[in-house]
Image (cartoon, rainbow, N blue to C red; front, side):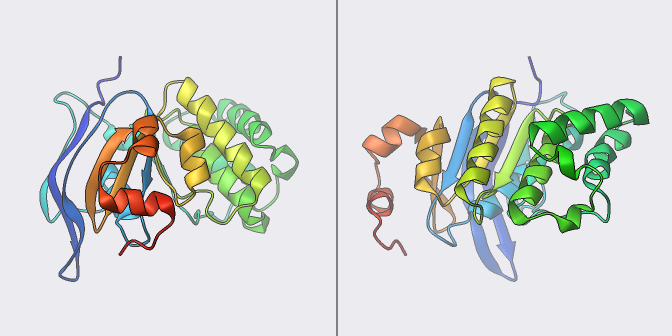
Length: 237
């Protein structure tokens, strides 16, 4: 049983240039599940993920891991909406995080080839990563995150600009990772994707968590006017 959970935000606030982007937020990430974070544009979805992961510093409030948990940075991963590609080949992109963790080069290369095959990038293994298409880059970024076996994975709208095939491949990979024990928290603007994947829904509006509920309950009986309007496709300000 992992000692990384629960992860808790308590009265967490993120500010930038004097403006409140998020909060105050109270939220707990438990050990199991696949959580989708949804809400209108500007609601704070990306900021919430970054605050949970530790990329954004809290102006007030706390982010607390369980007592005794250590090496949190190496036990979680983050996939950005626009992935950052190093000036390396596809294979070296995958080898790099393993080498940072002390995996022998030969073993790291074998694992990299396995993951490239999993993501249908085997033929591109020796190509510069920056030559890949947008969908291929996103699949590579996901493989690079998962290759280290993170216990907690954050994804910020990873399928926002992808076609149906690439989206399906990424969703299948996420479901496999979930089955293998990775806790997933993901932001999306795609309600079809949220319905397909989510076990839990976090609905954000104006930087606040307005609902945090099991996905079936949220989609059949949202509790707030903003959530009901959002699901109907109305403009939510």
